[in-house]
Image (cartoon, rainbow, N blue to C red):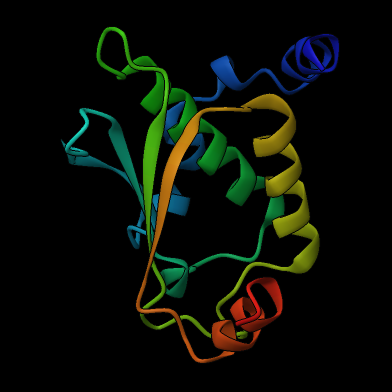
Length: 139
């Protein structure tokens, strides 16, 4: 896994992404690093997929990777995980990223940033998530 991540980093070069290259992705505030910390001191990334403003999968992914890298650099000493607050207000299938993009994001998170996510909170999920949770956690 480490070898694959090293190959990915050598090819993708996340450390070379500059804000001015992906700033247009952040104009609506769909993903940003919060100016506060989780009660355990972790950096908080706030995601608002309902504010999706572009269709370019590559730029969406680069924007998220840039913010993850930035969050890692700003973790307090002794902390190696972050928390995510995912605000699903305004979420719809029309404003959502494509399935291909979502799979690529999940692949990057699982394979190249394992263990970085401590907690993820879903805020105001639409009713479609109810069916998903019932399948995952039958009563």
